[in-house]
Image 1 (cartoon, helix red, strand yellow):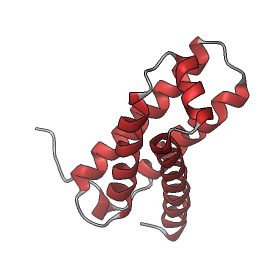
Image 2 (tube, one colour):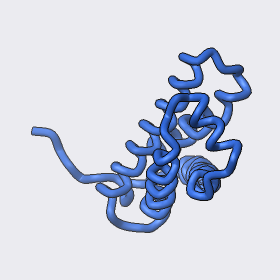
Image 3 (cartoon, helix red, strand yellow):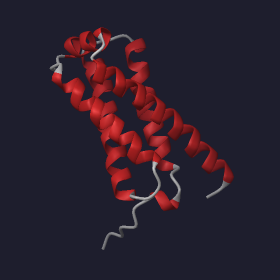
Image 4 (cartoon, helix red, strand yellow):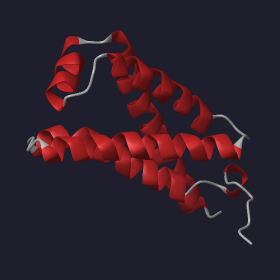
Length: 127
């Protein structure tokens, strides 16, 4: 892995982890703005707890060494959650301001996953 790729990976991964950590905490605390946003999107309030817990666990999985398969699942979960958020906002005709956070986290997920070091990748070979 080149030094450039390692820098890209760690910048994207740290920002992804901070974004998922902060939104996960906000969701677990069920802050009024987040509850209102989920109601606007048509999701039940209990979904905040589920998403918050999974985001925090995903951050741990992405940051700790080893367990590449768990990392793949965490990246997949981040991708599904953020692409779902972007899609939900678009379908409701929300402003680009509402899309910024989920879209940024979606891009950071893709960049972090793409530039991850070899020791953080699974070794499965398709046959």
